[in-house]
Image (cartoon, chains in turn purple, brown, blue, green):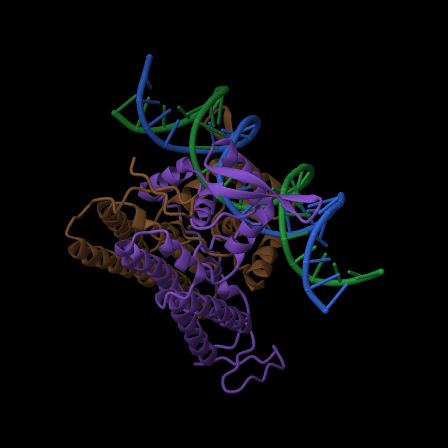
Length: 219
Length: 219
DNA sequence: GTAGTCATGTAAGAGGTTACATGATTAG
DNA sequence: CTAATCATGTAACCTCTTACATGACTAC
């Protein structure tokens, strides 16, 4: 149960509606990033309200409409701390991308190449995202962090920032590892391409991806 | 849908029962590692049978009992290839361990220390597991790989081994990144501990942030 | 003969995704 | 006036996990 604690983590800093919560959690560049759709948020908030982890204040929106602004309760704060202390449950890491590479011997090399290029693109985007966030955090210009710091004693500020940065470093390290791995993949494809040309068209120099029927055997 | 393709990947090399499949996929040191319980395997096999991706041969087991030995069909092989060519769907990576570190400012340093030590233990075990597997693969002593190679032309053997090794390298790189990150965490804790002099004490009582005024009561 | 393994399943539930439904409010 | 945004939800479905149910077989 981690969505619940992501919600508590946000509400501990700033009360907001379910709509805003979904927005906050799902947007990139957020200190508490745990993407969740409205279909997940609204029912969860109701459950949390029943368990007194959060409290809702019904506020008017315009003339007729209303909205429910959720705030964390004392019980909610305690639950957040209890969960933070608790060890994480390590689940088997099944990575669909890594897994798929097992079967690249039965597809054209061109496809594998595209795969690794996409992989690099995806993780470079994520890397940038995390690095940007860490920067706005370290110079204390992130609004959410500033608010978090404002409600905590000054002597804790360093620890708060360092732990948040460390959390981001975990994501950053992973992204870097994925990029390096994908580059290793591209290198392998190049090597195999110059060695054989049986399963698919191989761009040995510049891409001349015209015919797949070219069959050359070496040695 | 990836369990389905893990199953096809195994059956492409060796026909077996649902029981054996669950065993194979879930055991460490397996080339096709995609842990799945029987509750997942059996219904999936039935669905796959309906779609003609696999075929079952009912074989006797002892005198009265029977078992269903599943084999991959031509359609199944085609589906495996189709899926291998298809790009992977990248989902948001939510890592509960990285996420939790965000909240280490509200728990005792001792707890955080335990967390990182556990993290290192977990990923060292995984690292060993993958490295062992890669070794038994590279020297061609893995039984599953040997069987895979036996049914493929010799000139493909290198590519098969290299791609499987690459897949493992992805897991290995990730494990190494996690270990390095956790060590960074331990170092941070040491630094914070020496700054604070009081090791293992809660920074301050968690107070409700509901009131943004300076209303903090010590319970 | 009993314990552990082989073998096949069902039930319930957690967590997440996609799509749909509804209506008020605000910005241009 | 219209479109985008704010706001709250429901329904269906997918994947995975945990627990339970059943019974035959094998090793000791």
